[in-house]
Length: 335
Image (tube, rainbow, N blue to C red):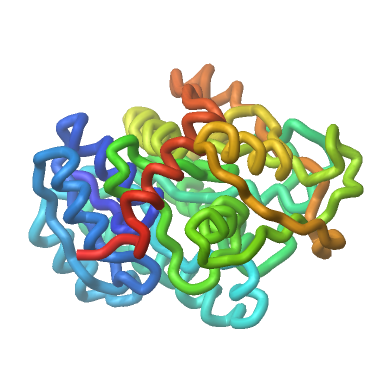
């Protein structure tokens, strides 16, 4: 059985779909602070398969131990954690306690029950203010906010764990910018509160919940002056986790970028969304935000070479699937 922490979230729920479709028995632990139980109900509807669900917090050591006692957990995919960059700057101690302590308790419990295969949800934020693109896994790491710092610290912790016990198999997946939704329109990104990332903000405009989209910075040294990022379809990302599980047959610590390797600008995303979906997205141009880099996209050749994984879906697919989800769910995910 595969245990998915944070499995009711955006990336977690799509990964659960792929796990179930590929015959994995699956259990989910999620405290539903940043997610909804409805996503798991919809995963069951998509796949026609059931999974175990534990509504519990990663900081609850005894609950973690109960889950491992009750199930034969072969490997863990670890998504659970607080993830809002801006919020992490405001309440850093909560981020450090939740994300790092939760991971420590998870690893201690895994070791206690002899489960030493772990796929960790890291982030491209560990590259900090990268000075050239594309970025590959050998580049120096640094961070610009507490959220990113928790990801990088956990990478170091997991590396030290392996160095202390060579029975561990740990895969660190550095995501770039996940967007898109399941082609059924049943599950997709449904952030709580005011969205921070570009696509959810764009969707708020498309839904009429925001008057216009703010474009921060039009004077970057890019092809149209706006910031360039590597957007990856969430289902391609989910496939990357299945490939990473296969790598867990080997002991070691393995690090992979998961992106498309293509840089798209803010304007590229807006215009593609408009063209594919036949809608108009009003926007206004504003000054740059401090700390934003001009361009960040991935070199994913290691994942293709070692995992046999490569992103397949296009920016058109990402925009089309996102719009289908928001039109089918105007009030977001509900039971």
